[in-house]
Length: 95
Image (cartoon, rainbow, N blue to C red; front, top):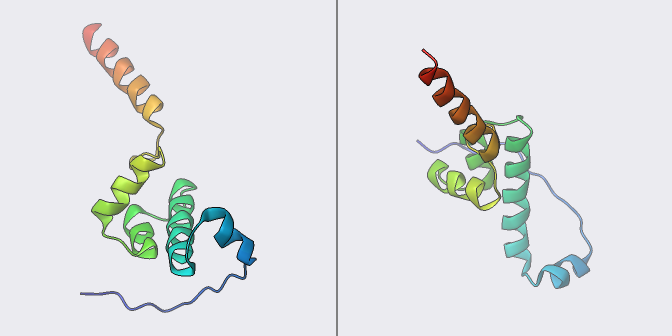
């Protein structure tokens, strides 16, 4: 079941942005939409599912994008997860 879009966001930008990024308008629109979704997820405003819908990609693709931008699907940085794992292993050996 597809979700129907209910809103539209229009952003004005100087044409120099396209030149600086070496992108066509449709490529820039996709990038801007993806970056907005990533930032809203990163700041805890959206879940991965809603962020994926905003980005216009399947959730599995959004997980891949999180990795590309060094963001965790678990809401923590990779180093924090490694620290948590190390603490858990150390605690389990103390018993």
